[in-house]
Length: 137
Image (cartoon, rainbow, N blue to C red; front, top):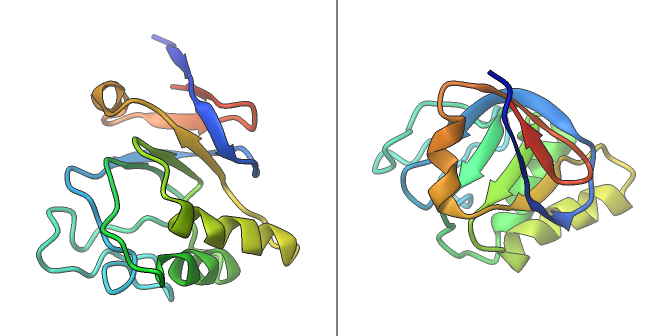
């Protein structure tokens, strides 16, 4: 079965394809994600030990730190960024990392906004996130 949803584009970037990683709790990228490999390292996070690298990352929210953008920038620079980011709520600080990466000429994933209530439909799927905001699986 093929389904699709249209999401709002928050930050333009490369379309991407990858397995969905739906976080069940908000995350702090600063101290929560290792930029050298993309692993979630916050031992209190339910998805600790999983990698965001190459995944279509569904974020129910973020736990603020002004350094989150630097971690996302490092992930893009190291080739460990998610294939796409799908956020329930826009996070300007986090997304700044994508904007800077794009300005540096690095490949950056598209960042999209989609209602969290739709996240479960993507569980255990291979998701394609298009530059225009279409999510298909």
